[in-house]
Image 1: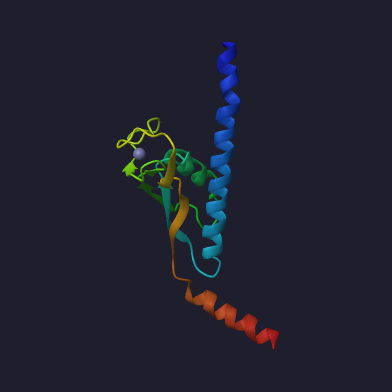
Image 2: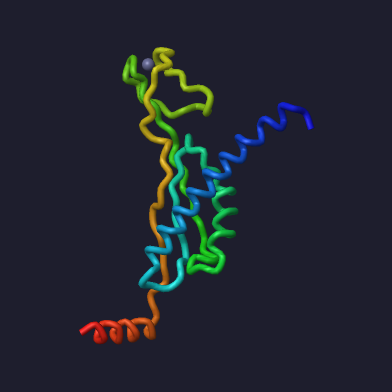
Length: 146
Ligand SMILES: [Zn+2]
């Protein structure tokens, strides 16, 4: 293996670690949401165009870490938010052409602010209604406390 190929490995590992950490976070949110309910059916995530998150990786980690939890077998649905930049020199707002061309189309300026495109968040979580049996056991808990 060439030396520079080996050098690239830690970078990939770091990205993977980051994606795993974020996916774990999403799972925690989903499970908290399902705490008093049934299984998690569907989780909608918003990913900005400039976010380093990759749909496939998140789905890959999700399937692994959700196994054996209420979220096992649930679907992840991704919406992408396009990146919009604002030129600090002339105030022009424009969608990003490619990830590597940030230049302002109006004045050629390079000092830009990102308005949208860096997001990564949970938009909504769909859980099944809790079962009748569960409601009954909750009443039992309540009366025990008195
Ligand atoms: Zn400009």
